[in-house]
Length: 152
Image 1 (cartoon, rainbow, N blue to C red):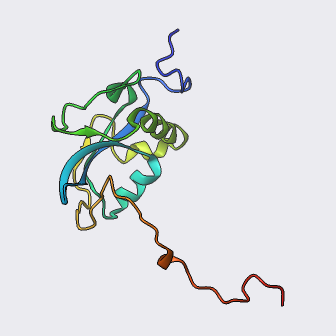
Image 2: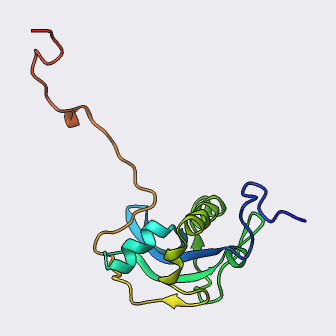
């Protein structure tokens, strides 16, 4: 018996997973560029998305782990545009997402295997910038009273 995923022996290529096509943005050269990114969607996030929260996902596809991940090699589903990029740590995140559907199998009913859900509440009003940096300055610190750390 061969193990399809050495880091996840409890998973097989037939295990259910949902992958989404997200519209994200990358800052570069003073401009913001739009990119399409494929990401695994864990069961808890999927349940929130199908409830109607605003999301950066244009569509979500119910598929198998083997269809999107062969060993450590990511595979693009045929319905996705060819210019789609894989998210960072796709293999690790796909295995983690597949585990969430194993522990919560009821979530697999939201998007049946082999189907794609496109009626999501898609919006890019709040842009998902992938390479943004948080710069923390001294002025951001909260001012405290002089006696905050003293025993009175």
